[in-house]
Length: 199
Image 1 (cartoon, rainbow, N blue to C red):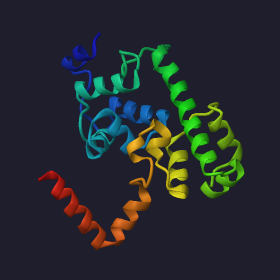
Image 2 (image 1 turned 30 degrees about the vertical axis):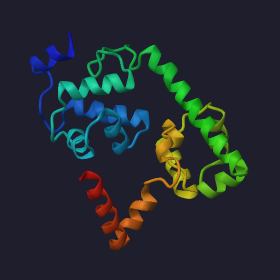
Image 3 (image 1 turned 60 degrees about the vertical axis):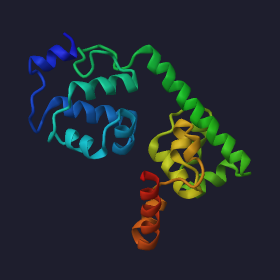
Image 4 (image 1 turned 90 degrees about the vertical axis):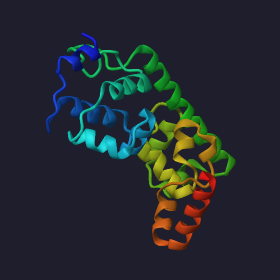
């Protein structure tokens, strides 16, 4: 039965323990994505995703289809029968490719800065074996891993993970957000620049 038919037949019911909401949480955790990253990838606000994950808001058919398309899931997700694969073969191959690319970007950046693996591991607070596995593409670079490098080395987690060149240098990450929280003058300046751009 198609997702649309299941929705029309009210197989997705709005309740605090809604199984579809729980399935979304399980998927996000399996992909090792933060709520913010997951929401951005599927084109929804972080606030909306939070409501869905808590069971406070019902995921629409459009949201489910967006998740399936973005992560190339089995078209019957989230209503998989026992034994059905979560991912399509294409998505598995792409995941391997993304993992390898993230590791390659990290190696490229590290060597460009003349930093040894042992040194980077110590600076970022990650284990050396884990770093080696990621750089060789044998282990997937997680958001948490990339964030540790971003915080320690001022190189964008988005660039490491997805190759986002615009955000590569001077990333708008936790370090900048913490600074803006503590510095009203800087916040005011940023807001003025944003308002000028919107005019």
